[in-house]
Amino acid sequence: MVRAYVVDRKATNVANKTINLELGVLRGVMKRAKLWHHFSDEIKPLPVHTQIGRAMTLDEKLRLAKTAEMKPEWQNARLAMVLALNTTMRACEIKALRWYDVDFLGGTVTIRRSKTEAGQRVIPLNDDALKAMRELYSRASTIGVPHPDHFVFPACENDRFDPTSPQKSWRSAWRSLRKAAGIAALRFHDLRHHAITELAESQASDATIMAIAGHVSRQMLEHYSHVRLDLKRKALDRLSISRTDSQGKSAGYDTNNDTGRPLARATTI
Image (cartoon, rainbow, N blue to C red):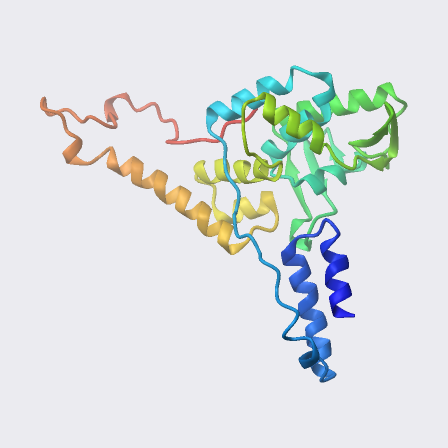
């Protein structure tokens, strides 16, 4: 029974970590029934990848944005990309959006369905995210009057939209777009990581990051804390006396030309 359960679960598109958690519940029940020892030698936890993700370079980000404008068939992938980069939303959160979640007047989007309760949140829309939402609404208006219950990213089959069902995937378009941009390996989920990295680089606190991004693991928060620490170290390195040139002038930060701008800030597309 347990073996069949594991095989069936591995055949689905479910993360190994989720399978391990569910097996943990099953193991607890069977241990209580004194049956687990019959299977303990055969059932082992599946390997879990601990990679957090990667952030893009500025050149990669600009190149991806420019390439995304080239083909109409990349529209869904492009607009989803813009939302992910400017809101930290996951792909599953973007696909679940309905028009009643979008407040154009207040400039916010409400995440009602997420991986965890901590993922349910209200996110302000910056200029780029709001522009993408308006483009999506304009497209929705061309196929009928958008209803609040309709999905922001409607299902489409044979060029026919069904706004009552969500878009299942933009995986093929994303891969083609990424390849055309010359970026070898970049998961769509990495866009969320990139957005959170830029928040950390802007010196946003852990509380602010979690308020915007929802659930963020302790491992991820520690990673972003290192990002902030690295920026602070680079800023202080500019003050080091060892960087003073032969003329007695600092080779780094010049207080006489301080513009008042932050050391680093997030960029958007």
